[in-house]
Image 1: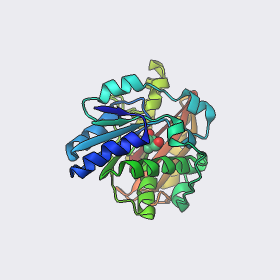
Image 2: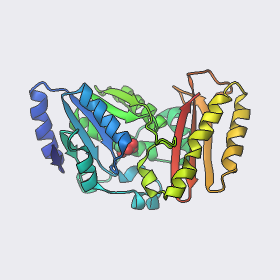
Image 3: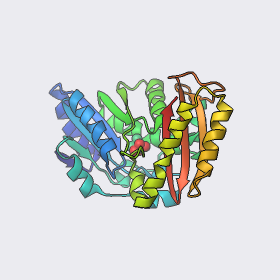
Length: 276
Ligand code: PAF
């Protein structure tokens, strides 16, 4: 495993690899790695000759400065966890990635204006900026993203389509704790007691799925009421949407409709999803 900090070194190392005709699988991350990331890396390992992982807490995708400050940074532990799976770990400093203020502007239309796009202005522009730069430097054959960030995955697919970037985007199922809690770097900020409370998110999403024959408004009422019973939760949104366009639907089409939720547990913002 090689740990690389600069773009120049990254390009040199990957040029050599590509010249030898080797396929590159890429997993972009913000660190604080967990078993969700490990499963993405393992899939990349199985499907490519060389595996690259980036670890970079991307400041321009945080619309809340406090969230950026508190985002867990655990590089040494991360390297230890994935050094036997990844061949190259790219962990640059912010000045390396953004020597000047970035000015890329993306337009994802309706796809980017709902849910996370509505509640986190500028978030997807920040994600698309870093991911497009990383794709440009790394030029992977395949890149792997978790379905937990379902809208992010749709945005990346759209960005790749718009910019005609030659990379295959692979969405991978959400990895969960035994309790059902979706694994997330943000879970590191939860106490053990809060983790037990947070497991209710998936329980309630499963309730929504069980009731997917009901009109959408009734499913929404059911979820809002169940979330409301847990005093530690502060619901930001619960949406039922077309799984491709992410636009709200009035009727569930089984297998093609997604339910997405975002809420606060204390100061920690958690998101989750389930296909209905
Ligand atoms: O999902 C994440 O961890 C980040 O949004 C990503 C894709 C690494 C971009 O910073």
